[in-house]
Length: 78
Ligand code: SF4
Ligand code: SF4
Picture 1 (cartoon, rainbow, N blue to C red):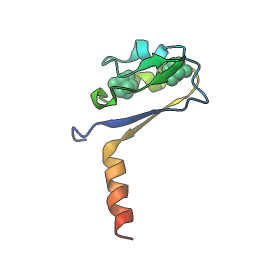
Picture 2 (cartoon, rainbow, N blue to C red):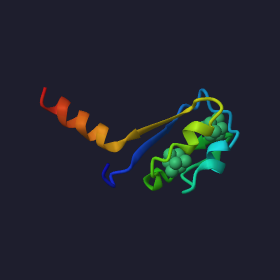
Picture 3 (tube, rainbow, N blue to C red):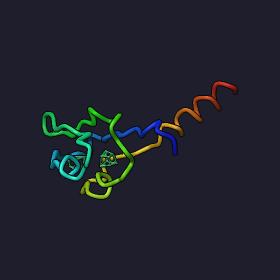
């Protein structure tokens, strides 16, 4: 994997604002705003998946940005 990083997304319909992701993340990617986790600093994400494992609601999705760029290139040719 390159240093392109990861896309972190939080499904706010599932998030309860418990802040477990905030506590688990070594790089403080999340802030809790209005009782929802927001991955404000997601450029710092190293893809360790601690937040995904810790989240009791299954609200966090982690996707390598390379996957996005791959699909972007793929679909731009079709
Ligand atoms: S995968 Fe790791 S570094 Fe990335 S947001 Fe989750 S806990 Fe933080
Ligand atoms: S651990 Fe999950 S439910 Fe808790 S604040 Fe983070 S995203 Fe929301």
